[in-house]
Length: 636
Image 1 (cartoon, rainbow, N blue to C red):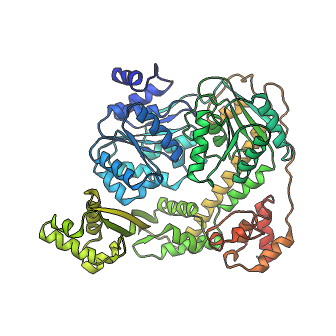
Image 2: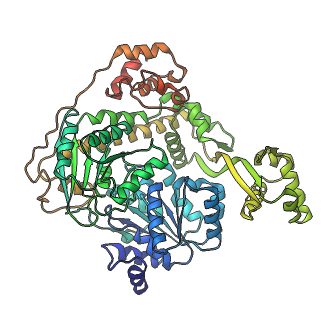
Image 3: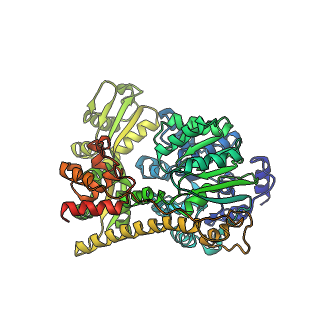
């Protein structure tokens, strides 16, 4: 570890390793994969950044958020480390420059979102490289038992094998014992290479403030008034709440800015940068904010709404006090929040009729087929994430195998005149390219080619056509745009009877729904439990805190009894009105219930029903009760 110590001090400007870091780095340098479970702010990033400089080849970092990638790449570049990120904010010229650096071996770290790893052109580039290490951040997303399962993550283990990755480092701050076990199984990590530091952070003073929805704003203001000048994050559930609470605080003399997915990129980036520079001390944000934000002096985390799970809560409070200084973490606990959170969970469960029709459609395809997630999502009124989850379930069941994603349309703009371009190739290749260009449709600036149609016309393999276009782009002879992403699949084995498979898929979604609802209930059970708040929180993550923390609101003797949940009864007149309107996009009871609870769906969005005056009219009524009313009025 002598050279690692040298890099730590001279490149990363740090004196010593934090707990667990040296063990993880040692494991990777010895050629083995590892799982690192460190609390938020525990120094997970260094565990792959430092060995990346000691290993031959490229370190590929799979990370879920642009904000995280931007922050880390900027910090590495400032230290002189050759790192880059590929994300949707990059211009064409920037992407080409990164590709060139990749090909020339100039990069040591490349950050990408997991979705980019379904891009056939990008995978082709990676396959030509020596990838010595793949770092998978937020690795709990690979587990269907985790609180944030993402289908694209489940494919990373096989991808690492396909790319002959030297070793894998899985990183997370929020894995329960069951989730950790599944991560290790997926990535073939030995038990001794599962390295975990304690979750307990003694500098975080946790508090629960029971309140009703009507009391919440003033309770928040009282808490902030006690610590007025400190960098703080206030977490909320809904975008409109972020805007309303930020306005409320500004009206009371505080500088606060909202942050949520509905803002334009430049607005979100401006809010983040102002917070990082200290110009805006308070950010009111939905859960995306804070992922990878390297700000060590956040002194307070306020949960204005209940978190979706204890995993989310642990991750979010972990952003406070990374400098070791005392920090407050206050939860404004209101049971009324359960309705909106439950409704989103129920809204993600597909309609039984749509699920059955979708499974039958997939199983009726030829042995080799492809699909567009967007088109299929619209056709069956199933959210894209739910559709991806179903396809993943079918892969796990052995019904499908994903082959390769591809684009149906390529647009070329000649940066080298066509005649001059053709003259650079021998006679056979030039003739092939000339015939290929002739299959396209010429516009003012772009030549549009469809590889599948071109392959049929020319009697050539589609792969040859795609490779040819990629080569022209790599040589700088053309500028290229792609569109029409489709995913290829192979139908492996369709079980009989099909009804049993449909029932199993429906059961998987029901179990997932029940698990998410249980997580919500566990937040309330924990918040109003007697005594120390830290001890049961540690127990949830498989650790034991021998003594009460002595600092939380429970240890200080405060009452955590939550006010009863306010339930808005179903307004049958509103339900009846929507059923009678007979919108094509709301033909099933679950579609009507989603609409009334303010949950969008592909068909409803396409029909612009979110502008309907009744959209979200029953958002504060439990989804199950709205659905029951819809079923009654539909006679089901």
